[in-house]
Image (cartoon, rainbow, N blue to C red; front, side, top):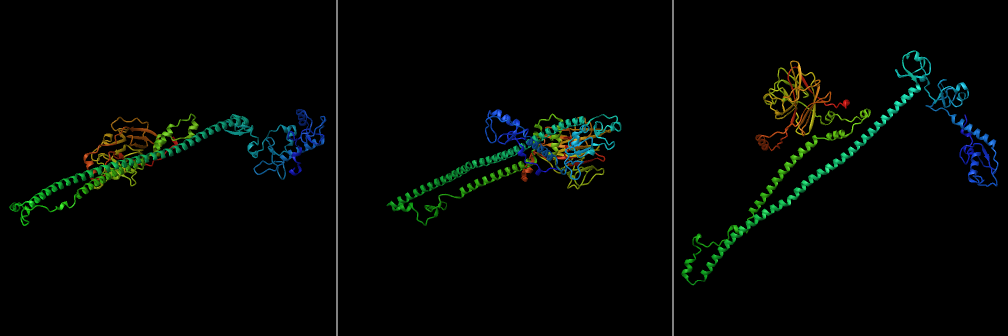
Length: 613
């Protein structure tokens, strides 16, 4: 094996004009070597005879002769270079030559006739011998045994289209005698065409996925921006409320001040009037006394002025009244001021209570609501793909029931104290069965239905959306849906909206099954009875819908439902006495009912089935 140390420097054998290994090397009189064609073309293009390297000019164009010894050296160098390129030891994972002994060189070709891999040296006979030239050579492969039929020890040359496997010619006369087979090359072209189509489909799928990622990233970014914008708008609304209240405070202060000032002025004016009257009376008395002092008539003086020892009611009242020690009475304005302060405190307290209740209700409604409707609208806004394959791989959840299951499912537990005496509720509150003998509850705790075989859920809902599922398989008759908290439990109640009950019903008469949406309407025409029924309520839209969970189809819907109710005056009075806020949005409770027999209704966990999406 030639080594790099035995090969001269390659730069020594390169022409400085074409920068390639010399071809027909010639030497100029100055001693530099060039390809004969390169130097001839150079002189022809320059119209000047000189050496390209040293720039030495010649009087006339020299007669160039091929340097035979140097040419032999170049050819020997090329052979050594080629030999050095191919004489490489096989590395782990590379196909070795099967002929080499000891250290094995890297194979350059594999012969499909000889079933042998050859290095460049051992491949020489296949390039020289005429019969060996006809052998089919391919790039080196290591799994030659996989290309040979183990049964007939022949090369695989055909492809059986029926069994989708490679076969030899002998197999066509044996196990694949009646099968259609094509050459491997033809089958390979077909398979490549399939791979090209599959590659295109995968590329389209990648584009769809990438687009979906972009859409959702934009949606997340937009959602964050919308959230920040909504928070800013909420803060702006509350700031406007605070500013509005603060703006009215000076007006209130001005009114209170005006009231207090007017009251003080009116009170002071009354005092001044009274004092002026008293001063006038005192001045009159003083004038009379001064006139008596100036009289010379002794009899008149004695008769007009009584001595100090005369009765008190005949004396001149000159004592200062006790209520005149101060020109104002402070108790009246203080009472007025206290009255206004208490009035403001009471009004502010009431406003604070109202705002607090409204805020709690708002927080509750926001907590119950979510962004699933917006997500559903986002999915609905997407245009469907025309390619069925791409539509399957993109797989967006466009199923309406799936969206409801993902976003609105609630955990429903039955309340045994609301059950009819012939209904038995399981300990976990997830099952109800008909109990022929009847059950007993103390009168103190009895809140159940007397005649209707119904039971209510423990938790009610007065806003938002909620969804639950009930297994109804193998039941003769049942009722399920939602009912108002105020539904009558004493007498028989027909489960209709007029009585505050929205239900889906199954009845069995004379071995004939009938399914009812509205209890008073004709039976529904269903291809098959549902095994599991989903109950969905949108309180804000006034809708109650029933779904067949297994077929994922809508069975029946109530629309325009009037969930709100008018509050009686007695109820309003009782709520006002207890200080409890009264709402005209009654709670809706899940309701289940069984007609008899060994029927069982079971509340099942909501599982999102994406196989139908």
